[in-house]
Length: 135
Length: 131
Image 1: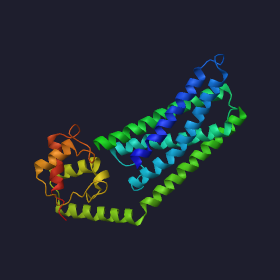
Image 2 (image 1 turned 30 degrees about the vertical axis):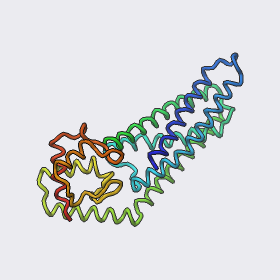
Image 3 (image 1 turned 135 degrees about the vertical axis):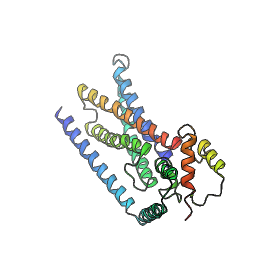
Image 4 (image 1 turned 90 degrees about the vertical axis):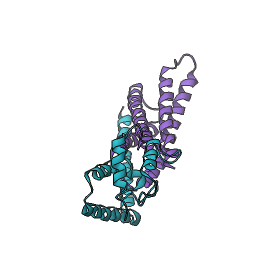
């Protein structure tokens, strides 16, 4: 179950980053609704990604009998996982609280943190794969 | 900007709370009767093994086992996600091949990670598991 549930938060958080970056790049003069649609897609992707982390984390803890750190590749997996999990929750709550009221500066800072979060989630997924394939 | 800062504070607080709950859940899982029984078995197996005084090769094998195999086969090698490794009926050559090539859909291959000497050490350790 853990192998299946983990891919949702990773993919959704990364998709959220892509949508938000696209919203930043799309010129407003071209299509006013496109930017807000992309931001909405980013918001919903992040929200779903944050919700899906719970299934991934709980199934992982059950699989490891409550092991929070471990050794070798498991330790590397956890080293990225716990900060990534914390960041996703923080980002999702921030986005929910701020809504569409975020200033351009605040949104760019948020974007910076979400790119970092996406990278951390990817690293957690990479070491999870290493654990599965190479032990 | 003030509302955004407040929202950031709320976000960080929520994150800390969720992490604390998660770690609490992990502690609960670790203290469950099944996990407790697994740990008691591991410690009794280890003390029995130390009484037997493993050869240096088997000792190296045990270190390798703990780093590479324990999270699937259990700390005591009595099985978890993977099967028990006590009283293995397979020949050394078969075991070596399984470790190198894995079992499709069930066990990853370690051929690129463990050389022949390491595999021999692992097998030496596995052969001590007879209780």
